[in-house]
Every structure is written in C-alpha cells, then in structure tokens.
Image (cartoon, rainbow, N blue to C red; front, top):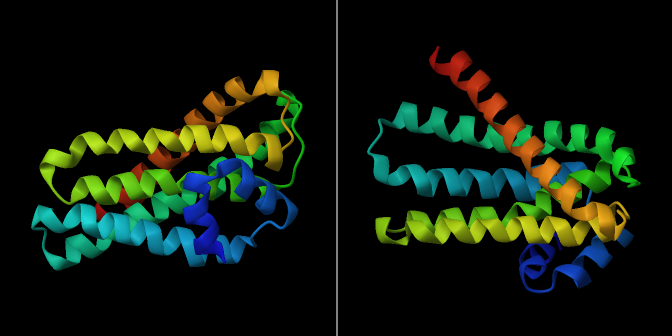
Amino acid sequence: MVWKRALLILIKPAKIWKEVAEKPVSALILLAGLILPLSALTSAVNLATDELPSDVLLFSILIYVLTIIGSITGGGYLIWRLSPRFFSQGSYLDVLNLAAFSYIAVFIALIVSSLHHHLDVLKLLGLYSVYIYWQGLTYMLKTPVERKTGFTLISAIILTGCGYLVNIIMEAVIFG
C-alpha cells in the first residue's frame, strides 16, 4: 500500500494526498518500509561507480540512509513546530508523511541519473518533489493558499539543512 501511494503520488499528487490525509501511514512503516529501502538503494546505486572498498562503501551507505532519515524526522519535527506560524494545522505524523512522500521524486531522479554520467541532468527532476510537497500542504496541514509557497521554501531549507547537519555529524563519528 505504501509503495503504491509512493508511485502514484508522482502521477496524481492531489488525489493521493487526499488519501494520505484521510489515513496517514504510520511512522514505522514510512521509515522502515519506504525511506530506509529507497535511501539504501539510492545510495548503493550512486556509490556503485565510485570503486570504493567494501567497508567504506557500507559506511557511506549507512551515512546516506541516516542522513535522509535524520532529515525527514528532525526536519519534520522543526516543520511541525513551525507550522502554526503559517496558519497550518496537523500532527507530527502528518508532517512525516508529507516529507517522506515528497522525497520520492528525489530518490527516482538520483537513481536514474546514477545509471550513466550523461544522465546527470536528470537530477533536476528531483525538483518535482517541491511541487509534490506544495500540493500536500493543502491536504496534510491545511495550509492556506497564500502561505503555501513561503512554507514550502522554508520547509525545503529546513529539510536540506537537517540533512547536511546529520551528514556532517555522521561522517565525523564514523570517519573522524
């Protein structure tokens, strides 16, 4: 069910966001059943061409997976706490669903662009995630239309910043 929603959100975001808002996916299923495998696959495909020793490759995959999970959970928490300032309402679980499902376009863009160096330009397709997130604000957090664009941009900065912070910490702990 979670995988079906994840793929359909790329095609019909408004319809799927409505379904997700009515019945959000649990945090455990979202993280363990969707984000963990997708981030591991993305990392493995992306790093496969780097010819790293197997131990470094495994640690790099671990760092990437934890970076994405940290970005979604930590960034999601900050977004949830910030949401009243944008006249939004919803639970932390709603924000987790919003962030996790919005990442799907990024994962697909990174996997496809990693297949060959001439496909690097396809990473730009990951920006579709911003649109998916923007659409989801209406259904998941009931954000007023006039506040959606600003909230989307702030959320993107928060999610990206949390990801970089977790990445720096994980690299220092593991490779430090």
